[in-house]
Length: 324
Ligand code: TYM
Image 1 (tube, rainbow, N blue to C red):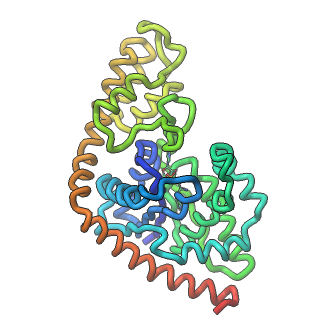
Image 2 (tube, rainbow, N blue to C red; image 1 turned 30 degrees about the horizontal axis):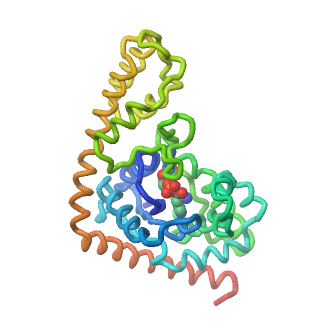
Image 3 (cartoon, protein in one colour; image 1 turned 45 degrees about the vertical axis):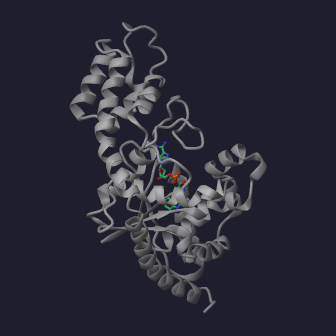
């Protein structure tokens, strides 16, 4: 069975970009892969964060993932810092990672701009820690959104460099994308993300979601109700592709171009489909919130399994690099 590994940061609300770009794929792959999912708290501390909220965010990330369909009997879910080998392997990988390449990473450059007063080494080293996450479990596939593809390419390079220097040890992992790998924010201009506050949270109330959709940007050239629209450049059409049936997507594509349907009706349609999708997740999340013992036990079991795998791989790594 192929092994997949992926991660999510506990840095606040999980949004529909995370869900459509990554989590949906994780759920889809559960039956065919040995699946390991990680709440990456070490990654989350590379930017300023609220220390007092960290544990709550970690638990919420676990709850949202389980509620979204990550059945703990079919996968391993754990918190990164519970397996210290992630940081040990990061250090070893630091010694084969080209500095120039890290400095050219898109996410590093963006985050360095966003956090001008806190451009720390961890922010630069972020992709090396991510490579360690993946390779510590010798994962073959990494289901992620498009924004992470560069980091997965970097992980492949780290595996190649390590193998070249010390002998064949790690596989080169492949990025696995969904059919909607890049969900744009409600402004339609930038990627949906927690830090840009342009998102729809997976657990947000229907009326909050409707208000966000109602005011979201559509095809800017469509000024009046009777103007034909262009779904190819409408951000909400991308969301239809994630939440509506193929028949509805086809109909909206046609009716928008002929101005048979207006933006408000199109948004209402999307809202109903989105809520039909999100409501069962929200209901399950509410139940899980009341059962913290269960959530904690899932994470503890996950950590135990990962500690075993990581322990074995690190023994092999220490041996091949001459640090027995
Ligand atoms: P994070 O927490 O930013 O995002 C989690 C997952 O959601 C995807 N995603 C999106 N997909 C489509 N459209 C969007 N607007 C959107 N926003 C987020 C991300 O691509 C990601 O798959 N570096 C990772 C966490 C990580 C990791 C790993 C992932 C750490 N170690 C090892 C894979 C393997 C991140 O920032 O995720």
